[in-house]
Image 1: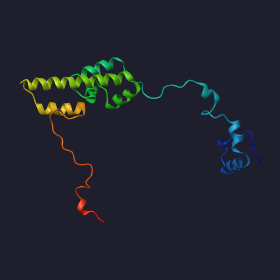
Image 2 (image 1 turned 60 degrees about the horizontal axis):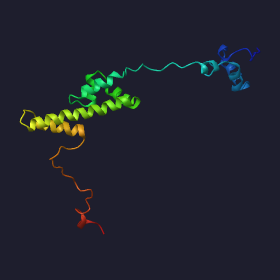
Image 3 (image 1 turned 180 degrees about the horizontal axis):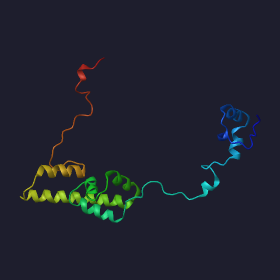
Image 4 (image 1 turned 120 degrees about the horizontal axis):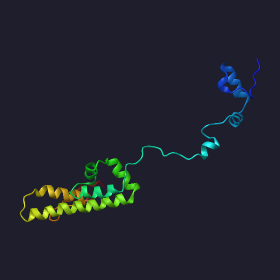
Length: 167
């Protein structure tokens, strides 16, 4: 039995030994040059690519909605949940859209304004929970409220164990 290797593709052979002979006698470059590869063909490379994945739900008007949601004292994540945005989308949109990042910063400023106004009202005698306001301000600003004492451990414990040092 003779095989015509120039016409018979490898997938047309039923006998594994014939496939092996074909692989031994013809280098890979021979097959690659004679058969078109749908993945690396030139017409595939020149075609325009379709966007991959789900289209974004981001809209520019969401910036203003987020600012208004955060103005009630909410964090960025809570404000996003209030306008039906996931936390993951919130963080991705911050990277992709600079105006969205600016809206979050504006919302944080308005949240601090909300909590500070509430603290001033409680200080003037209105009813409210001052501990809750203090915790919210700590969370929003990242620093303790004025008038609170903080205790810090020394950076080095060497003075405490000085007499017990090994010589």
